Length: 164
Image 1 (tube, rainbow, N blue to C red):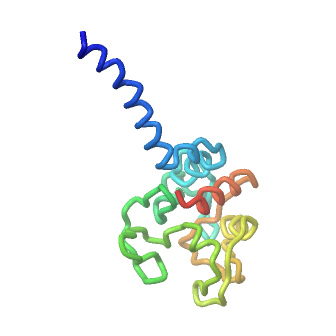
Image 2: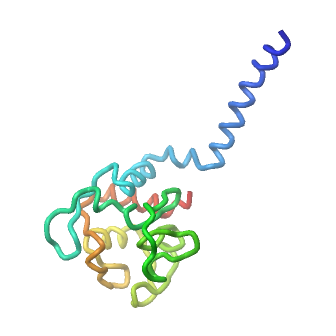
Image 3: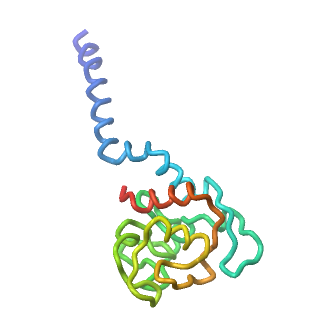
């Protein structure tokens, strides 16, 4: 009987411990609908129609998801090796493109040979839709051009600046 009583008291304590760990890992942040949508867009489970930077036919969703080339806060890339120091060769990053996070987005820094610039939500939307970065530099054709709503763009912005 003592063991049963002891086990019954252990369950609530264990539950509280697990809840505390999840809180520390950002579980409340994951409850944010914009963050959830941003993650779904980034991973490709919510489609974003896209074309290559040269125009051409629409790309299949599996070819245009962000995670094919980038990692993001709490979302690893799919393992492509970096090709240049400018393309995310920081220690531990195995993305083809730069790791997308608040430091990259919000800090002024030279990009693609252009002047120092930083992103805000409208600048990210312009980059995704038109392939033009905040300094006016046109991205390479390898970066898809997306057809996405303002809400989708804001959801991606929320994910990329979340630092989960």
